[in-house]
Length: 92
Image 1 (cartoon, helix red, strand yellow):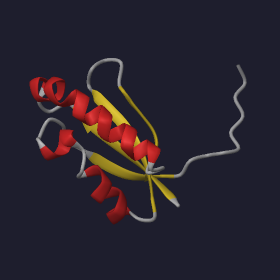
Image 2 (image 1 turned 135 degrees about the vertical axis):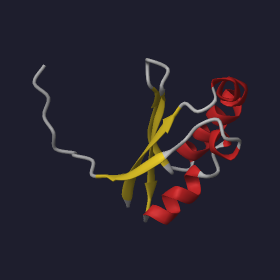
Image 3 (image 1 turned 120 degrees about the horizontal axis):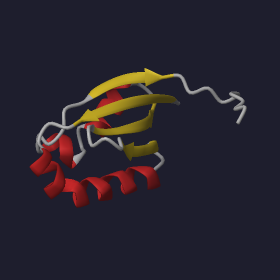
C-alpha cells in the first residue's frame, strides 16, 4: 500500500460551500472503505488536504476524481506520492 497526498486548492468558493455536504459524505465513505488515511481543511480557507491509500498513482487518481468537488469544478487538485514516516519521535 502507498499513500498519496492530494492538495485541493480553492477554485470556486460558492460551489465549494454548496457541495460541502456531498464532499464530506464522499470522504466518510472513502475512510470507511480504508481508501483515505486522513483529511482536513486548511485553517486559512485556501482548500484542503486528503491522504489516499492506494496501490498506485492511477488508483489514487481514480479515487480523487470521484470527489464531488472535483467532478463539479469546485477545487483544483495536485497529487504526490507521500512517504509516511512511522518512526518519528516528537519532543514536545
